[in-house]
Length: 226
Length: 327
Image (cartoon, rainbow over all chains, first blue to last red; front, side, top):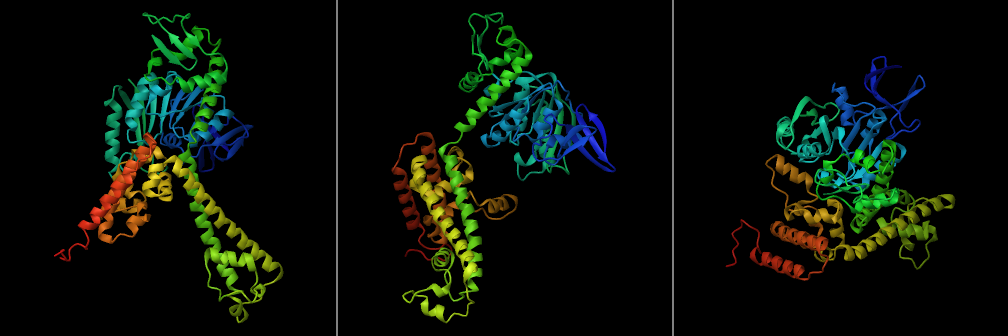
C-alpha cells in the first residue's frame, strides 16, 4: 500500500486505483468510530470516512487545509468527535477547543477527550461565544459544522471573538437547516454573501464547493479573516 | 476592570496592565477549577481583551505552556462531566420511559404474532390474542392440561391441533411467560410516567393527560422546547409527512398530529376536529409554559378549555355544506 502526504498530517493511502484518506493515529491501537486502522511501515493510520465528516469531504474537494502540528483550533459543533479525532491526529502539538451543546453527544466527546491530550471539551451553545470566552483563547483556525439556521452569524460572532488576524474559517453549510424547501443553490449564494461581510467581521472567500456526492445539499467554504 | 477567566478573576488597571495583587486566582486543583468554570460563566465577552495563555503565565498561575494546557484540559473535562450529569432532568428521564414503551409495544406485537402462529399449531380453535393468549399459554401450556371447569375444556377435547408435550411444551411456555413479563413491565413503566408527570408537568398532565403529555415532551425533546413552541406547531407535531406535503405542494394543511390520540379530538365529529385541535393545542402550549417557567398548578386552564370546546360544539352542531340550519 502506498502512502502519500497530501497536506501536513493528512495522508492518502492508495492500493491500485482505490484511494483512501487517513491520518496518523495519535492513540495507536484505538479506533474512535470503528473506522479501520491500517498499518503501513510500522505507522498506524486511521481511515477518514468522508461520508461522515464534512471536512474529510472538503479535503477530497481539493480544499487547502490550513492545519499544521502546532495549530490551535476552535471546533464548533463537535458532536461525538468523529472529525475532531482526525484534527487531533493532525494538530498533535496544538490544542483543539471542541464546543458542543448537546449533553448526550458530549458524553461520547468527553470519553474521546480523556484518551487524547490535545482536546479541550466545552459544553456550551456555539451561538453565545461569551459563554465560553473564559476558556477559549485566540485560535488559528475555526471549524464550524452546526446545522443551525443562523450558521453564518454564529461563524462571524466566533471569528470576531476568537480568530487571530489572517486566521482561517472552514465552514460547512447545510441548506436543509436553513430552509427545508427552498433551492439549495439560492441559499448557498445568500449564505456566502452573509459570511463575507454581513456581520461585524469581513472574510475573504478562498474556496467554495458543494460537497456532493459525499454530503447532499451541503456547501463547504474556506475563508480568511481580513 | 475585572475579567473572568477559567483560572480566576483578573483585575486590570487603566492602562490594561494586570495588577497582580488584586487578582483572585483559583487553586491549582482541577476539581475547584471545574466548579469555577461552571459558576463563573461570563455574561459579556470581557476576557477577549486579553490573551488567556500569556496572562496565566504573567500572573504566575502556571509556569509553562504545557502546564497551562494540561490543567485547562483536565479542568474542562471535569466541568463537562459535572454539566452532563446535571443535564439529566426529570423530563429527560420521562422521555426514556416513553421511548421504552414504544419499543416494548413493537416487541410485544412481534412476539405475540409469533406465539399465535406457534401455539396455533397445537390449539387453533383458541381465539385469544396478545396478552390473553400469552397468559393462557403461560398458565396452562398444552391443551391437555385443561381441567373440566375451564371454559375451553370441551373445545380443546375436539381440537384439530397437534399434541404438545415434553421439551416442546416447556419452550413454548417460557416464551409465553417472557411475553407476559413484557406486558407487566409496560404497565409498570406507564405507572412510572403517570407518577412523574404529575410532578414534572402538573398542568400539562391536567390538560393532555400523562401519556399524551409525556409523548409530546418526548417528540419535542424536552419540556423547555415544548414550552417554547408556538401552539400551531404543537397542533401538528407528529404529522410531519402531511405538514411537509402541505408546505411543498398544494396539499391541505394537517389539522392534528399526535394530539389526535386524545379522546377530546378522537371522539369529536370530523367537522369539529380541526377547531377543537386548535383550542386544545393552545391550552397545551399554555400549560407547558406554566409548568416550565413557574411550576404552579393553574385550574383555570382546564375550565377555559371545557368552555371553549362546548362553545365549538354548540356553534357547529352539523356538518358544513349541507344547509341544515338550526331552524
